Amino acid sequence: MASLIDLRSINRVYEMGGESLYALKNLTLSIDTGSYVAIMGTSGSGKSTLMNIVGCLDRPTSGSYSLDGVDILRCSDDQLAEVRNAKIGFVFQQFNLLASMTAIDNVMLPMVYAGVPKVERYNRAVQVLEQVGLGSRLYHRPNQLSGGQQQRVSIARALANKPSILLADEPTGALDSHTAEDTMHLFNELVSHGITVIVVTHDQDTADHARRIVRMRDGEIVDDTVCS
Amino acid sequence: MGLAELFLIAWQGILSNRLRSSLTVLGIVIGIASVITLMGIGEGAKLEAEKQVQALGVNLIYIRPGSIGTSGVSMGQGTAPTLTYEDVLAIKENCPAAEDVAAQYTSSLQIQAGEKNTLTTVVGTDPSFPDIRNFHTAQGRFFTVQEANDSARVCVVGDGVVEDVFSGASAVGKKLLIRGELFTVVGVMEHKGANATGDQDDQVFIPIQTGYSTLFGLNLVSGRAVKSILVQAKAGEDLQAQFQITNLLRLRHNIQSPDGDDFTIRTQMDILQTAQSITGVFALLLGATASISLLVGGIGIMNIMLVSVTERTREIGIRKAIGAKYRDILMQFVFEAIVLSLTGGIFGILLGLGSAYWVGSLGQWTTVVTPSSVVLSFLVSLAIGLFFGIYPARKAALLDPIVALRSE
Ligand SMILES: Nc1ncnc2c1ncn2[C@@H]1O[C@H](COP(=O)(O)OP(=O)(O)O)[C@@H](O)[C@H]1O
Ligand SMILES: [Mg+2]
Image: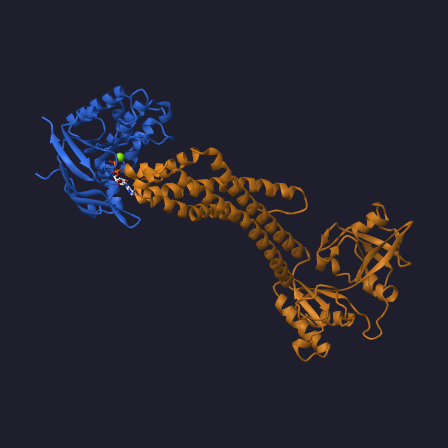
């Protein structure tokens, strides 16, 4: 059976003042459904670039990428937006919530773009917010929530459209260790529900929750370990 | 995404920066309000001019000495004494399409009653004048055919003259000295107000025959000159009447080609058209002036939308990351611009109606706000939002999600 994520010979090249900078260099990586993968590496090793390509936010300079059997490089911008909307949930380091909206409005937003009817949207948003333990904070705005709570709203938003993949780029970077631990437990739970989780992290403790650790350096994968 | 959804997203965007949104809306409010008010003034002027022309009478034809110059119709009093009272009689005699004819000879003369005297316009005319001009007596009567034929020394005074020399008291039966000649007042005209030719209430009417024998004197060359001839055409026969009079006068004056005409003949329709074209230009100028403020308002919207797109780049990135398509972002910002300009449009229409009413109540101007100008303003404000919103919206929709997400 083909993998959920199948990256082959991916190059991502930035042209900088006549010089070519390889953010990703001939990278090949497959990830199966239900995996829990941590990506580690020093700053500038290409982790975010990889996540952006996996998340269909960015296109590689060359190579091939099939996601759930779809040839991503052949998709138009709007088709990529649809893929992101339906299959991928992003959790960002800076949470990236819309400051002018309440928690529930933020969580409903992906469903707005998916065309989910209003009532269903509301019910689903309440459900995911309860799932992340924020059932009592539906109408708070981001600035009325703690960092950990904001992180959980952003996870709820990522889960709103029942994605098959959750991508988290340094999700715990802005959190204290206790809250970070809570977030990782939440991810464990999601994986147990069959969601594929990919986490970028510096932190070995965070990575230890994952079942597979991919290490990068200078745009290449230097180590790929499946934990028993 | 449905319209309601788009509207909601746009509305949230607008509310997230209320002060700025209100100031932007204010620009449109002022623009639309001035369009409504100024168009109302222009429309009012048009209506007023039409009313004045209508008030001249019905099926009126107006003949004056002198021809149409190269610079168009001469608006001053005719100077060449080419029309005579014999022409008037000939028209009466020979033009079947002319229902009624009245000559006019006007002269500015001193009048006096008791201690009071003033300078006024004395009009020598025929007894048919009130019917032709639709300008009647309010007290007493107009002079009769008999009195005209007898060159009787009777006069009818305008309502302003009563104020000036009779101190507002009843004038009928009183004596009035016109350049030293004694006249008896037999009637007072109704109040008519001013028109383009002057104050119609500051006039004294006398039989034209009396005028020739006492006040106006005779022109030795041309005999009994008249300064204008008023003809009332039979209903629906204005053009025939105009045709008959033109031919008759050319014949009588020995004129070979139309270029040689020594008279000008205008129908009420001509006068109406001239008035309409003048007031039309006036209305257009007012509209154009107001449009400039609207344009400024529109540029204000574009400016704010560009600032807004720049400021909200990160938001756009987030929306794109979670699945917003090109059209979603485009529509969000276009809708925001449209909601801003339509809000401005609606408040502008209300303010414009109010200020048009206010200007009208000052008494100097008649203002008429037509439904079409309201509908037009509404559509224009919609178009402004669309036109000035689309460029910033496109800019937003074309942003690369990664670049947008990384912006601060
Ligand atoms: N937009 C860009 N333009 C130029 N170089 C970039 C751009 N984005 C990333 N890079 C470069 O690509 C490399 C990998 O970056 P990134 O994936 O962000 O690293 P990481 O997330 O592992 O810290 C870095 O050297 C970075 O400078
Ligand atoms: Mg990074």
